[in-house]
Length: 335
Ligand code: ASP
Image (cartoon, rainbow, N blue to C red; front, side, top):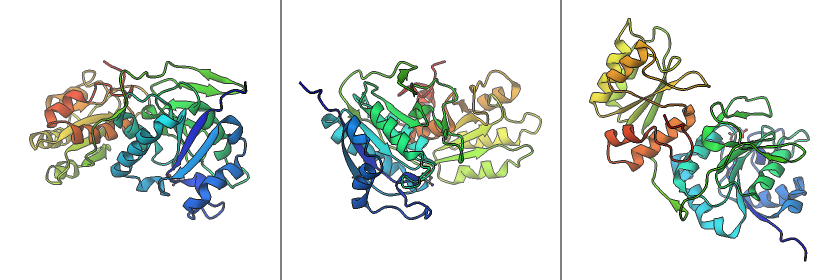
């Protein structure tokens, strides 16, 4: 008996991969995409039976929480008929979408692999072909989580950050090992998540989150002004393990003002690798005393999207603070 052919659905959302070469702002028309993909990468049909659908054709900086919710609905509606799903997406904001899908899609039974390209598929030096081949291959395997596949590595999507606008190895996962590596074969490197019940879309997003990166000697007023801005949470990218200045207490007073206004203040780090620890230095302890919470070892992308998710899903700021460090889909290492 011939082996049963695997089936992979490709959902296109936009980005460089689907653009015409040399005119980086001109996207392929939706009805061109499916055939263009199989013409450019015919070997995909050897790995799996492929269907490609265009959900939208956006530069990823235009992808919003409303898109995340509709992508999740598409995936949940389609998942039964396929071994796995590949989502082609712009590289710039891919890590945000991957985090969002990982929070929405509970008990995912199949792989959902996001990929894209630094150069368009039709370009002779495109990285998109190898990325698509790897992503489709991985989507046929039992890796039931939202991943990002790029340049030979499958990373947990909500642990991923875009590290380069130049290198084909565009992503890294600073605080969690890769899930898998593709070389002459496929090697699993970490244990994937496992579903514990039926697939469900859980929660929604409230995008009223602002991010502020602290600078040496920065005035506190811009941070303080956020108290009247209507945001529900502020992600402060503090120094090192989560420190704010202690000699000049302006930033700490601004955080206190935000907290008193019912705004969740989460402290992240400007460092890529390592974790936020608000007990280690006086600057972290001060932030904690005035009501801020740390983001553990989450990436900025995962922490920001999780704040949006918890704001949209929880009953109020106390619950958001309480759930921030509880893992939803492996995005944070439990304390
Ligand atoms: N600006 C593009 C995007 O994120 C970049 C890319 O896809 O590489 O949609």
